[in-house]
Amino acid sequence: MQFRAPLRGIVFSLLFALPVFGSGQWTINGPDGGNVRRLLFDPNDSSIVYAGATNGLFRSADGGRHWNAAPALLGTIFLDIAIAGSDSTNVFAASPFGLYKSSDRGVTWQMIQSAGSFHLAVSAQNPKIVYSVSITGLLRSADGGATFENRGSGLPAGLATGIALDPHNDSILYAAFPSATGIYKTTDGGAHWVQSNSGLTAAQVFSLAVDPSDGTTLYAGASTIFKSSDGAASWTPLTTGYSDLACLELQVSPSTRTTILAATNHGAMISTDGGSSWRRGAGLLDAVAVAVAFDPHDASTFLAAAFVHVDRSTDGGATTVRSESGLTSFSAQSIAADPHNDAVIYAAGPAGVARSTDRGRTWSLSATLQPTKIAIDANASTLYAVSGTVQRSVDGANTWLDFGAGLPQGVSPQFIAADPQLSGTLYAIVNGAVYKKTGDDAWTKRSNGLADSMDSVTVDPRSSSTLYAAGPAGVFRSVDGAATWAAANTGLTGLNAVGVAVDPYDSRHLFAWSPTQAFESTDGSATWLLRSGVRGDLFFDSSAPGVVIENVFNDVKRSSDGGRTFQSLAQGLPPSHSLFAMGADGTLYLGDSSGGVFVFNFNSAPAKRRAAGRP
Image (cartoon, rainbow, N blue to C red; front, side, top):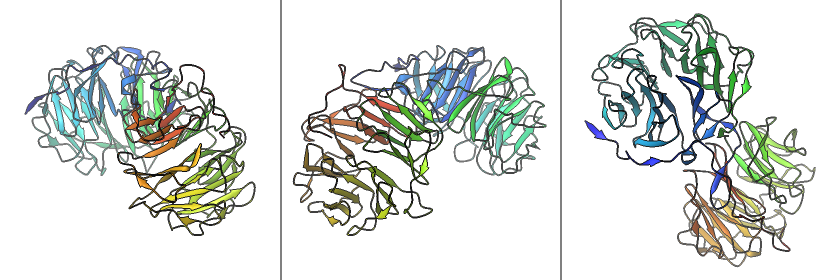
């Protein structure tokens, strides 16, 4: 069956430069680093490198030292990249949202196939021959992606974990699968397939690579690394020194065929003797590596994406330097805005804690702690973080001390919040129960009157003694600093509450919500009314009365009339996000584990002045 790509001709003007930071749209300038899934040098110009990441498609024009993003693709995950060796103006990029192509070395891009793509291979001689592992099967194009036909008949069910094309014969293709079915081979462009597993003892194969100078030599990454010297007719396991190896990617140097890179759960490994022996140099850290790429003209120069960073080596791995400037794929698990300094924002994740003092334009990173959640004290100089237990920093996240005395041992808090008025007063949720900490006193459980499982705690910004707790049983209110609680559910029909927002200009005005519905109270939670059409997280802007933000998975909306009507803030919005924070001046921040922190600043003039009397 042959079909035409439905979106062919819809061209995105994706100039490879970051968007201008300004007002009226979402922009991103960091933090740098993050989850890179694929690295690839231009085979004819080693100054040009591409990176496919969970946060978009990036391009470097200086060998990987600095990166620029395709702006319209920010927030889109990319899993693979392939370049036609005979004409490297043609670049293909695979995303679960579709297959993209550039015909001008990545200056502009178009979606050529709407079916999700996961792995790619392009003929070294003919840039029109393209193979794609798609959700609809293995696809082949003979016209550069204008049309595709299914060539997966005879292959096992499920997605292939990798494909590799013979560099001298584009009818010979190999496909690996994450099961005992192993590796399949076709010699007629996918019309027929045969299993090619002799000697392949691994239960799962994660990656494949073909020697670019000899199509009969292949490498397969699994629980060890296997080599074939006869076109996959037979396989021999190689000694790596690790009994628990998981090899996620392999690449053979285009300039020195005996030099091979492997991305593994023990970091990037290198062999200079065709796989007979493997080593990790001093610069190849013991972190999970997911992508590697050789400079096509120099086997001693390569890039490696390990855990949440990209490193570059020019001496065969003896030393490496960080090589991720502009690669905004930082995995954020929590973001928090300074309540007093309009310009300060923090983002925390597996790479550490990143801090910006200019509303997200530039960032600095501290890697001493990798928190899942962060909160800022009312004094703004103290940070709190959840990393196994609660930690505290008084020097901008550079050093941390355990701050969890009194909390249950061995259980990580699911939630943490700081009182916006009382410095040193904290609330946490552990195993669904609310705990409170005041100053240097130990944490104490404060769940008297609460249901068994709570999700969040909100402090009234005008009264530290008034708090709200939200959970599957609805909303609970305390008027004595969390000493006792009482249900406040009149009108909350069937709400599995995840949060409560209190108007900083009127404590009687509240919202309670779940991902699918929201309720409003105008009498301090005595009664609630369902708000039709409103859902998701809701936030009041402390810098402007009547402003409410509605944050949902694929949209952000703003109301200037207290939540009666909302307008979408969709310009530049990434496809998805899970985190949200608001600066003291109303600047909006969002992000998630896919990468980076997106910023929406309403102000083209100097920052708004906070209304008199507001915290």
